[in-house]
Image (cartoon, rainbow, N blue to C red):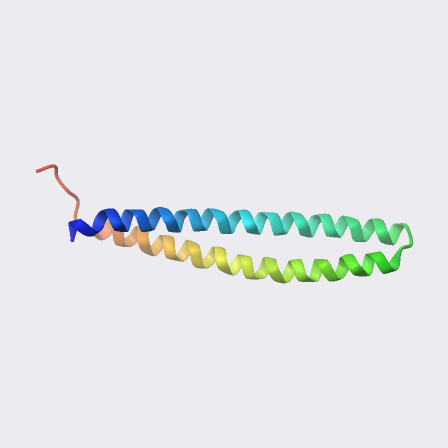
Length: 96
């Protein structure tokens, strides 16, 4: 069992990196949402309804992508928690 600990640690590091990447991706999508909202408002203020509609379509797609990204973040966090639990349940080496 103890020979599996290094592999397990490596897997946990990989999962932790996946959580970070998923969170960064979600943050980028949220920023894109904010940018698109601003562009929609600017286009409507300028009376350019056609451009605003194009941005609105992009915003809808970005929201869908963000919802999927939220799911990925939650799955990655659940995997990380499960890995951490498994690691905590292993007996500790006592230096002997």
